[in-house]
Image 1 (cartoon, rainbow, N blue to C red):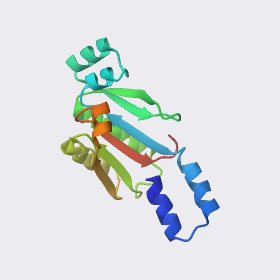
Image 2: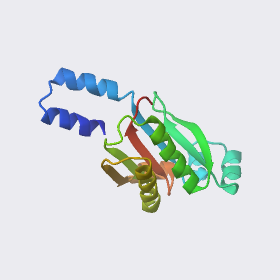
Image 3: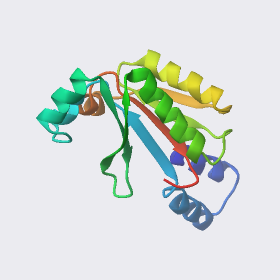
Image 4: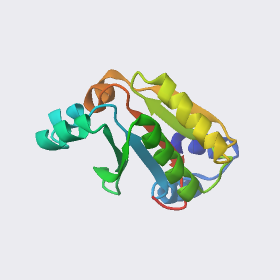
Length: 158
């Protein structure tokens, strides 16, 4: 999203220093939230314990995760089942979005249905901009596991 903004600023004829300043400010407002299909992939990469992975899987608990200021993945909530997790992502958007007309990103790991469901929920929350939807590349997909859905947007803060 920041690259697209930079390209637009260049097309608009903005000076390099102004573009740099704008992007430096934007990075503190870039929101990234996601939920995973199965906890075992986060357990394999050391993000959650084996016990939490087993209990969470049995209870169908989906973690709500976000990238923090240092780029680390942190837990920011939990939901029971995929639809509730996607609804929680949409709630984060509604609460934090700076501009409901701005471009957003939705990424998924072999879960186009989940990505489409999230987009429909965002539309219900008033989003009327362009959504760029992509399937994760294999490296990220292997890290988070299948059925992951992620949402990226510019917020009023992280």
